[in-house]
Image 1: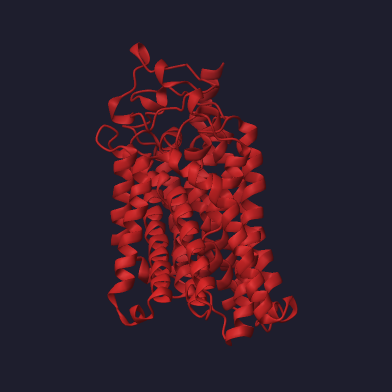
Image 2: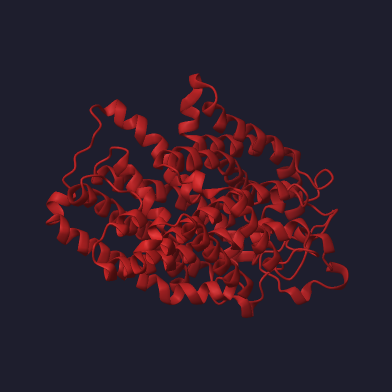
Length: 484
């Protein structure tokens, strides 16, 4: 048995000779980051969350709560609570990325095995592909709306939206091809710009609605506490599910952190503040649309299209485009690119993985996922949270409770080491994952246990984590012997 358990990150130059990695598990994109690559400070992580939070899907997530019947206080409270909850697994999984410099698909080898790691990696990747398609579809709609502002006759041309959609998709692919540093550059200047544009939209709608009073006066449409809770709990699960993807692959970003402290402070300050701030803008503007236009308009592209001042609509749509590209590349390309690369490191690079993500995003027909706020929140968000919650529970349990944050960095890139388990698969992780996913999603199909689906992420997270902990008892004993 290999008894080397490292507590610090290693650089790629150490992977040679006796410790040469298995070519099936290694390429330059999956290698631990070297000190020269650790360039992300606290501001970069705050900017990361502001740029990713200030997207159209965040706005629509918040707006959907108003459209579903909540008042603004209930909506803000739901969003804040959901993001504080998801921040916990986010920071826990981020620790390994900053400590060892490894990306998500490598980190998850510790719990699932080098072969089994492809299962959670592909679950995460497929969800990201869906998100990529959604964001690209929204960006295409924004471009089409801009075309209509400049050329009104285009409103009657059915193909304009599709041309704009495919054009925006191609633009995203160009950014992917330029690599991860282009993401940091894009975020550094765009985060404050996006905040400014959001506040301008809020100020304009505030003026049109006649002040905050009329804008936020819409009461809750729930007649009883029971009816409110029936909507609240699946909505809370959707809030957690919104960032359930990033709570898994956050090591893909924290592996570039200068220090553990910089990513910890940056994320703790960035995520909840950015989400609540930008969500409030979506909530307030959606509430005001009821006053100004007579109906709650949850889609900002549709809302901006109703403005009679072309310059306001054009400026707002430009902001939507920047926000959408920021969130799309950072949240929905980095992780699946690494995940696909993990399948065949010698054949699939980060760039190739990004191209695969783009094409699968098209194949998932995002226009159907965004048909209504119900299909977006209770179908898409809650549904996939039941897939990813169990993975998060297993990862957190393995790293903190089973291994006490100690990983053998060399063995993560080799077969037949301490993470080999049985033919590269950890039976405990597979069993815990299957049972957790089943329990989380069974309520979608069996009405008697529908409440399980309402809490899909929570059910999967805690059940899979508990099952994994119990099944890993023997492995914990072996690890104690290695440390001794």
